Image (cartoon, rainbow over all chains, first blue to last red; front, top):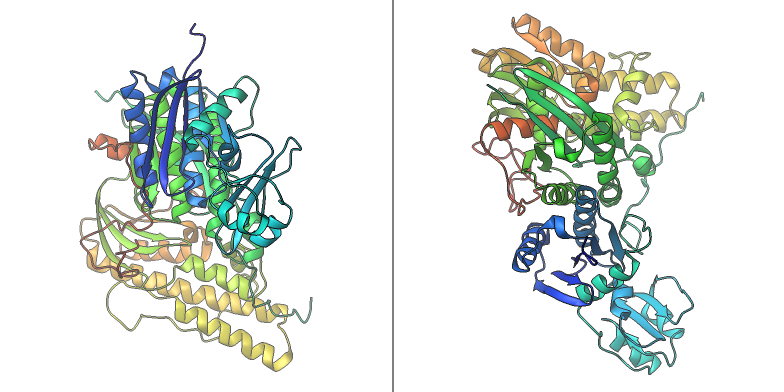
Length: 216
Length: 361
């Protein structure tokens, strides 16, 4: 039995198909293709190309790492659904890694990851060993609690303008970070990967209440 | 010699997450398992299916349904010959989750992948349940669709007509919502209608004055709103009798329209047809079903209505349609696209959604 089976990590939580194939600490292949649509069509063929390029097949994999967001709702579901299907068929674990964890990977702590969530809001998580949960907040509300902390993420510049914190570049590509985190978790039982939305679905109860029943 | 095919089907185009295993060979067809996880409670507060909520639920239920379906069939993926999945038309978030889950399973298990049109799944169900031979006429009538088809082959569908606006199932749901009845509206309205007087309200029978098999239900919905509002304005609410009469009148109007348009479809396009078949959730309504059966009888055609569990959305029909496609020599690659719009009959001009994005269904 081989000591370390390869791990394949992928992410479609934003305008890309990103993937990394690792065996232990060794990167066997990495890809990031930019696209605003078409991830559902491109993801699996891209992964097959990477495996084939490394002389591997699906059944050689020991684990799947998958980006679970937050990010584009549909994009997150594309990867999570594929990962769960692969895990079922291969009998290997699929391990969910959040975009916020991945962006903090390899950076010194403490660090705050702050990602643009549009609509004037940001996805925020502080990594300082305290186990703070990820959350959605307005940029201003998020910045209020971050004074002096180093920042990373797509809204880091905007937040730094309010907090004066230093802005850090990510330490590695997103898919590599997902692969490294997933590899660390692969030894212990993991829940099935589930999307991390942070933002509720747009759904409003009907505005028009039903009529009163006179003889109820 | 037919060596047989065992196919895993996956369906997630609306508010049911479903997986099934179907085996076919030597003239035998067997549903080894059929698992359907509904989402009624999830959407109950909103008076209709919320696409994003549906997609969220599908993404986390699909693999569980597949495992349950394999388990109940007593088979591992090593005993499956292909994975069939609904690739449209439908709510795209759910369809995409299903397609991606199917791709993962197909890639991981080294199985062929077959993309299936959800409507073809419904339209081919009478062949799964009753072994019906081609050609036959079909009324597909559900919450999202309403069309008459002449089914000539597993991939040859001629659309004879269809709704130009809402689907009848959608109108039943809306009626239930307007009258404070629970969702899904079909069973709730049918139950109320039993105690009602169908003649009290003179609801319109849209498009009966026009030739052909096209249908319309949005005007009927509006008429129901007007009748309800007139009662509320008069006495501040509805009595139980009012509600029952509104349901009975609405159901009678839908029944009359479907029956008359079916009669025309059979008269004008029934030559050589082996049967008149129905599918879709609305075909579960016993008043409507009885009327359609009467139309078939009058035309001297066999009437085929699959059991309710195979009339509403399910994955056995997707597995079966996949078997039909595989037998025709087709399968798809891992680049299979999920399609929100995918008409069965591409030769006919679009009835709805004829804009930039093309025909809906």
